[in-house]
Structure formats: C-alpha cells, structure tokens
Image 1 (tube, rainbow, N blue to C red):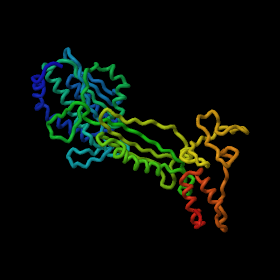
Image 2: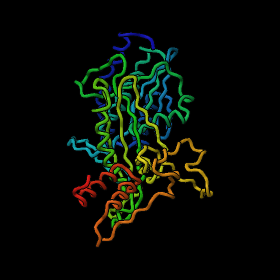
Image 3: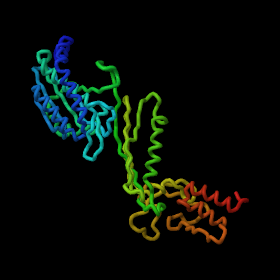
Image 4: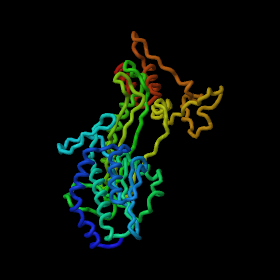
Length: 392
C-alpha cells in the first residue's frame, strides 16, 4: 500500500463518523455469541456489512468462514484476520448486552476471549479503507476465521481452497485485545503472544461392575493421577525462564456411578513461547495386562520386558521367547537347569485358614505375586515378619 502518516491520518479521520455504528455492532455480536463451526449468524452479519462497503465476498469458506477482497488499483496485498467464535462459558458481567445465548446442548455461550472486539475492529478497518480509497492503493483482504478456539478453523479454510479464492498477500496481520489502556496499540519484535496446542489423551482400562472392582482396571484413577502429575510439568521440567502454561480443561469417563468405565479422556492445552514447541508422540496401544506386566521383574530378579505370548499355540520344544522377536530372554537362575517359561512358573495357592502360613508359602507370594514385582515382594516380606517375628 502507498502513502505514509498522511494517508493513515486521512483514513482514521473518518473514524468518528462510524464509531456509533461500530459500538452497536460490537454489542450485537457480544450479545449473540456462537461456538466454533456454528458462527452462522455472525458470518452472515459480516458478509452483509462487507458487501455494503463494496467488497467481493466469499462465504462458507471452511464452513462458516468469510473473506472480503477490495482491489484498489495496483500495489501489494495485505490480509487482516479476525476470529469469530466464542466459548462455552456463562457470562456474569451484568452488562445490559450480556450474553444469554446457549448452544444446542443447552450450554451457556459467551465471548470471553475478545473475538467480538476482533470482528468489530476488522469491520471498522474494512469500512474506513473502502470510504477513503484515494488515500491508499493495493489489495485489502479481510478474513474472518471460524473455530479459533477448537484450533482447526484456519486449517479448514485452507483445505477448502482459500488460497485459490483470494489474491496472495505479502503480509498477514492479526490482532488480539489485552488488558491495557484503551486507545493504545502495542507491538514488539519477535513473538508477542504464545502458541497454543491442544491434546486429547485417552486412557484405556477394563470395565467392571461396582460389586467386582477387582475384576477391572479403573481408568478414572489413572486419569486422576495423570492430572495431578501434569501440574508439575511446568514447575519441575520446564526451565524457569521459558514461559509455559499447561491446562487440563476437560476430563470425562463413564456414564454410570455403579461401574468402572472402559476408558477415560482428558483434554489439555499447552501454551508456549519462543522457538521451542512441544511435541507429543502417540505410544503404541497396549492392553492393560501387558502394561502392568511390563513394569514387573522376572522371578530371577533380572530386569526383563514382558513379551506378549504368540497368538498361536507354540509347538512343543519351541524356544521362548520366539526367536523372531528382538528382545532377549532373562538370564537363567543359577539353581535352575531348564530355562524359565510362563508355563513352567510355580503356582501358589493360599494356605488353609486353619493352618498358619509357613515360610515357603510366603516366599511363593514374594516370587509370584504380580509376577514378582517389587511391590508384591515388599508386601510378602512384611507378611513373613508378622508370621515369624524372629526371621529376617
């Protein structure tokens, strides 16, 4: 675009003539918020105002996105972007134009992140530039993006052919309201705000009835422990001078209070700044049984990763573990001549209630409880000391 301070002053000189209309527009958008991918009323209002200013309007880009293009002679293209969606939060501001809107599920909806202001500011800029065309030249692109909060609105617009519908800009500009004095515009070199990444984590367990909890694996407990553990990631694993925020904003599991659900899901948001970005590798899905066994130790006392049994029965005399796997078998115990196999491991039965436990029974617990994991061994040693106070 051509011009300098004089051109900007000429454009802004018309602001007072449209200020009252912009304030009405802001109140209307604030009072009628819409969640991501549901911004039908907002996008229709935006499209109508852009057409009234002489823009070439593209609607339904990526669902509910709107793009207005104003070509004013020769010159570079500049794209301004504003987001339109709201959040599922109940408004308690007490304002006369406070939102009372709800979504299809009855959840209250509010413009709690300033997107109503972003829409109004971009509509005001688009109108001013259309009214004072002799103060600039080039192409102005006003892009109104849906679904910024879910994080996929921009991707959907690009996938829907955004780059084929509008001229290629030389620069893209965005804005965000902040708790600073009104009437000021803040800028700085480098990153100004944080990058946000959303994650959905699913924890798999085993469903069971409330009367037989020992038959299940409770993903609710796993999710609860994970949420507590995540609170220490920023305070204990991120450098003090590296700003980061981790928020668990959603946790859901089950629909019935009398049974263990099959899975639990948490959704979290990570905000970071600077060159470093967090990444999340999705681990291979394994059964709850294999996850428990992988943390145990073999009866020989040597660390060994548990290898799932083959899906087909092994022929007699076949080696264990299968030679096709890359994991080596645990070293044999010095006192045992044949190699240890799952089929040959000793079975332990609890003693009769009428007879006192003997040391061999207790040792069996220490070796075989939970495949000889450390917790089972410690519990068995405590049992041994109670049964035989003089033993060590």
